[in-house]
Image (cartoon, rainbow, N blue to C red; front, side, top):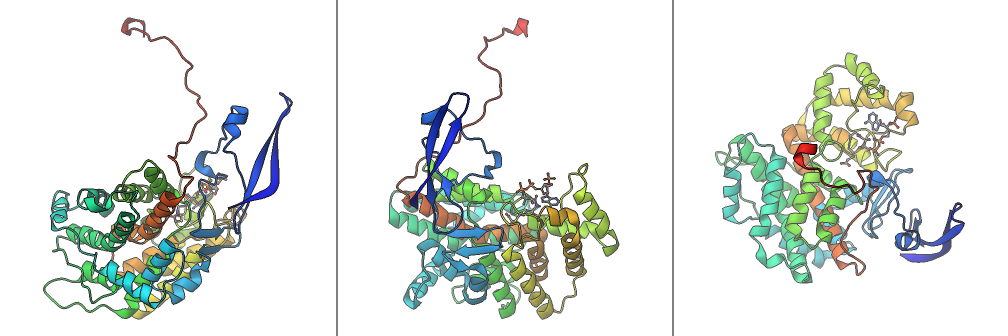
Length: 432
Ligand code: CMC
């Protein structure tokens, strides 16, 4: 961050006073007004529910230009990463700031591979859940429970412990997710296999059964890897901000990631991929598309087109474009002619021509096509957000590390515009 020569002046016309606020510049993107001294100088807070105009931290991980539809991780465009890197390379990049060289990559891949097993006692947690529990409920619970198993990596002031906790989380999340999936199906858990890469191993843990050999299809493993890359990080979204806020109090990383999973679950965020597929199933037929677009437009109907719109993107979500291509690749490879894909493409076309969606700059987001691919890979809808969580763990833990290492970091503590009653005397029961 550099301090700009620019100063913003805030004038209180009534009081006849002026306050000068410094303007700070990043490397790219809009400048920010530094309001840290505002309360001290004016006795006033800023008011920004939903944080539409608030930069909550300084970060060097991810940059989004929502107007142009650009997404960069450490400067590298998402399209290039999805096309040329593998997921663990992107994980290394997000964690460390640079792409790994050959030795660094070998060391990182090896470390992640050798941390994929979870403590055997953890499987007892799964057995405590009902078989029909939502896998996000299970994932949230068991991730928080990791804090109780890995005491040697919860001292956040020790960089070595932070590193091992980060690697454990990235390594173990697919194992925990696959166990949640297996549990819901009543099938035995599969242990990780160290001869497989990250995406292959995840597919193996989800789909292999002891009764027969399982061979991972390289096209499907590549698609899985791409899906993970596309979800790896996304700046200060709701779940990432949740992880940062939880971590700002000094909570251990396993607890913070569990908080992130809880935030991701909602349909306005990571739960949208599940909601898209449910919506497409509900629409069912092309003849009903116009009716649903009309419902989404209507002020009197709370219905929204899931997979459309984004707080930051006012253009195509670049991840959605890659996801659309991957969707076609997977369906072609599997020889699947999914009517839901056709329905989705027609819905996209219809919405993109509709003045309501055009005026509000509502474009398909990453969740619009991901559900169709995940369904083709064999995942039930309830697992879609779990897969998002597996991938986003990399972003969450990288952002958490960045925050802990930031010398200006202190506990996150927003203020409020209080509109409740002013001080009043307690009323005894007989006077209420
Ligand atoms: N369908 C219909 N109208 C919409 C939609 C939609 N999908 N999204 C936004 N709008 C309208 C909204 O009604 C509002 O209209 P008005 O100005 O007349 O009140 C306007 O567009 C702006 O919407 P907003 O809710 O103020 O925007 P936001 O930035 O607070 O919300 C969002 C962003 C992603 C929550 C929202 O677009 C949405 O609910 N989309 C559907 C859910 C979804 O696909 N979420 C996944 C987001 S991408 C992946 C992720 O982050 O996890």
